[in-house]
Length: 230
Image: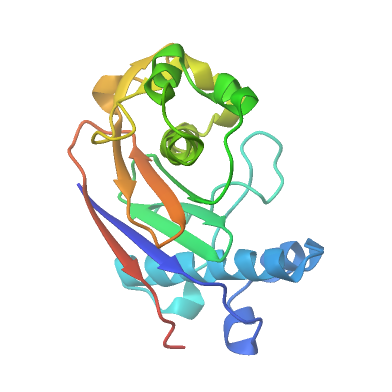
């Protein structure tokens, strides 16, 4: 399965980008208090619409998303185009925003800055006993790097299922942090190793990222850093 991941730095809040937001998206943009959050939201939407327009052969200005949350009805759900053979996942951290695009199969993308710490409490909360065992004996820098390999994989599968943290993080176990990403076991019926595919991504220096797709097909992932031509 051909999977496309596109990365971008935060866009400026210029009219050429702002005009691509519809009224609902404009409202969400204005609701953010921090300028950095506004720019990340804007970038995620513009990047996702650019990818959608290219894959579906549509004019960029005509791409309209429905982001209605299936649980509460508010417009903060996964952006989608009803009826289109396209699934999108948006993630951001620091100064990096990413969009993953697949055919109509569940996909989840996660990116995290690599300079965060991983204390024992966070490790105990997030990792299965087998995963935590893989971190034993590592120095603090190595332990943090390994932890966030697991963390991005877990966030990616949570997004792919749409269940988020309703799946206990400790109930799923991945391959070792230094081995190709795969789901080894799951204690939740929403995730089956036979129908879950993952890949660790390059993203950018200073970041860790992963993608998960609920499929039996093997993944072929391409990553591209986007430069807007608007």
